[in-house]
Amino acid sequence: MAKLDHSKLDHYRQLIQQLLTQAAQIPSTYGEIERQTLFDTQRDHYQLVNTGWESHRRIYGCLIHVDIRNEKIWIQYDGTETGIANQLVELGVPKQDIVLAFQSPFMRQLTEFAVS
Image (cartoon, rainbow, N blue to C red; front, side, top):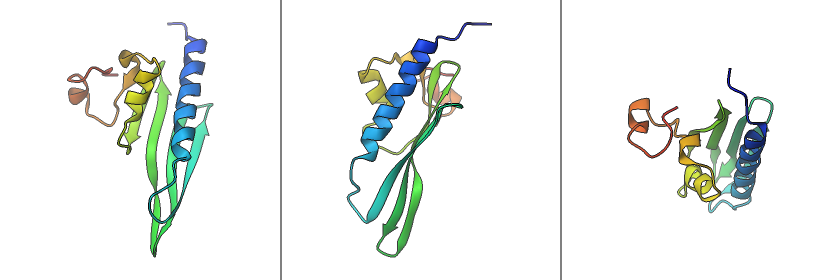
């Protein structure tokens, strides 16, 4: 069994939390929308969620969902223009440690990122 690199995992956790916290501080351009960060650091699940109202319409939904599995960052969903994968790469995370989980395994092999 491979030994886990806890310093690498702690670094990835810190980067993900930092990026989601920064994104949560960007005000919504419409309605009364609050952005909430949800961090499950024991199971390595991280989300940014929009909640609130736009006029008479309820707004609720996940904007970003990231997990850490097998020492890799799995991007389950990314509803941003910039892309959290690009931000992670800019912060020094190797592309082979990032899985675009929202794409099918077939499509993942056509990218520069990890397949799984």
